[in-house]
Length: 496
Image: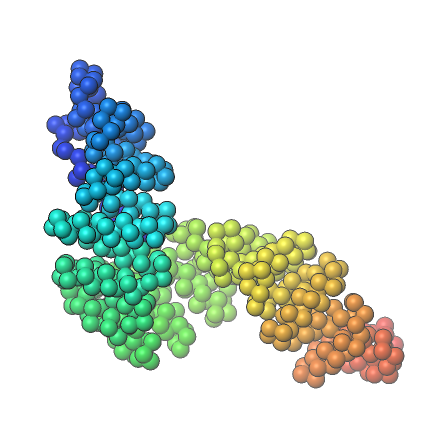
C-alpha cells in the first residue's frame, strides 16, 4: 500500500494555481477563443482539464504557455502534474526539476520532485529532495498538512533504504512540530520497532491507543512487541481491551484476525473459531478467509480449506498466497490439474518464497500428470530460487527419474538427502543409484532405509536388485521374499 504522502502531489498540489473565475472547461474555452493571448485563461483551462482527467489536453495548454513564458511557475507545475497523472514519471521529473532551478526557494517544486523520485524508487534522490522541501517549509512556516507530508515522505525514504533508525529521528522531529498527531506517532513507533528499539516504541503506541483504542495497526504492533518479550498473554489482553471498545464490526474483525494469528500455533481450534467470527463480522476481510483456509489445511480438511480460499479469491484474485492456498488444497484433494492451474497463476505474480513454493507445486502436479518436461522446468526454477528446499530437490529427482535422466535424478536426490535426509528421499536415491549402476551405493542407502522402516516393501524390493548385482544372491532372495510378505507383487516372480 502506498503511503498517504504519495497522493499529496495529486490532491495538495493545486494550491500552486490561482483560483480561476470558472472551472468549467467549456466556459474557459469560449473565453480563450475571445482572447487567445490571455495566459491566465490558458492556465485556468489547463487546470480545468486536469480536474476533468483530460491530461493530454492539459499538457498541451501548459506547453503553449511555457513557449510564451518559460518562467511561468503555474505552467511548469501544471505540466508536471499532468505528466505525473499520466504515469510519465520521466517527464514529470523534468518539469519539477525545472521548478527547483527556476524557483529554488519554493517548497512545491522540491516536494513534488521528491514524490516523483519516490514513485520511481529512486529513494536516495527522494531523500535529498524531501530534506530540501522540509528546510524550506520550516523556514517559511508552511501550513501543517503540506509540511507533515514532507516529513512522512522523508521518513519513508530512509526506511526504504534500510535506515529505520534515521526514519525514526525524522519522525521525532515531526512529532515535536505536530504534537499529538496520531499518524506521525504511530509511524514513529513502527520505525523504532524496526530499528530494534521496540521498548522505546511502547509509550508512543499507548499514546495512540489512548486517543483511538480501535487503531488496529497500533494495538497489533503492541501485541507483537509483547509476544517478542515472551508476554503472549499480555498481548492477548491488549487485543481484548480494543475489542471491548470497538463498535465497528470491521475493526472487530481485524482485531479477531490478529488474535487468531497469535493463537494459531498453541491453540489452533480456538484460532479457527476466532477466524470464523471474523469472517461473519466482515465478509470482505480476505485475510481472515485466507487464514481460515490455512487453518483448515493444518487441520487436515482440504475441502473446507478450499471453500475459504475461494471466498478469499473472490475478494483478492491477484493475491499469490490465496492462489497458492487453492493450489495446495487442490493437491491434497488429489486434483492435480487444478493444483497445476492455481500454482501457475500464483507463480506468475509471486516473488521470493511464495514463488518458490508455487513452482514446487507446479512441478509436483505436472509430474503426477505425466508432464515430466514441464515438471523439470518448474522444479529447476524452484531450486534456483531456493537451493535449500529439500522437497524441491526430491520432486526434481523424481521427475528426472521418470524422464529417464538418471544422472540428474541422482544429483537432485543426493541434494534432497543432504538437506532433510527423509526416508522417501533416500529410498528414491537408492533406486536412482540402481539406474546408474552404482550398486554398492544403492545397497548402502537401501539397507539403512529398511533398518529404519522394516515395512517399506519397495525399499526391500530395490535392495534385492542391488544385492543381486553385487552377486549376493541369497541375501537378494531374502530381500525379495520380505517385499512379497509385505504385499509387493512385483517381487513374486523373483521368489517363485
